[in-house]
Image (cartoon, rainbow, N blue to C red):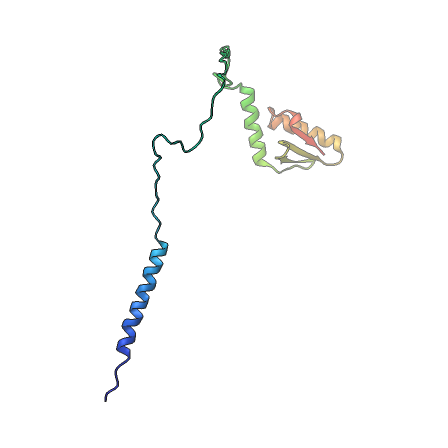
Length: 148
C-alpha cells in the first residue's frame, strides 16, 4: 500500500496556523471603541458649588496714560560724529592686529575696547601712538583704548 504524502498536509496546516496568529495580533492591536455615556436629565453627576454671598463689585479706576513725547526712534539721522566714530572703529577693528615699531593694537571683544601694547620706552611709544591715532582715526577717542 502506498504511503500518504505528509507534505501535502503540513503546508495547509502551517498556513492556517499563521492566519490564526495574524488574526489574533490584529485583534489585540485594534483600538477598543470609545463608549460615551450621556448623563440622564435631572441627575447631577458632580456636585455644584453653592454661592452663599454675592461679592461686591467695586469699579477699579482706569489709569489714563499721558501721551509719549518720544518713542525712542530717531526721526532724523544720527549725528555725523557718531557715524564717523562707528565707521572708524569698524575699520580699525578689521585691521587688527596692527603692528608698529613702537606699539601694537588688538581688539578685545569682551570689553569692546582696543588693547594697545607699548614698546620701551613707553613715553615715546605713547607719543607715537597718539600722533598715529590723530592722523589715521581722529574720531576714535582715547577712552576706547586700554594700554599695557
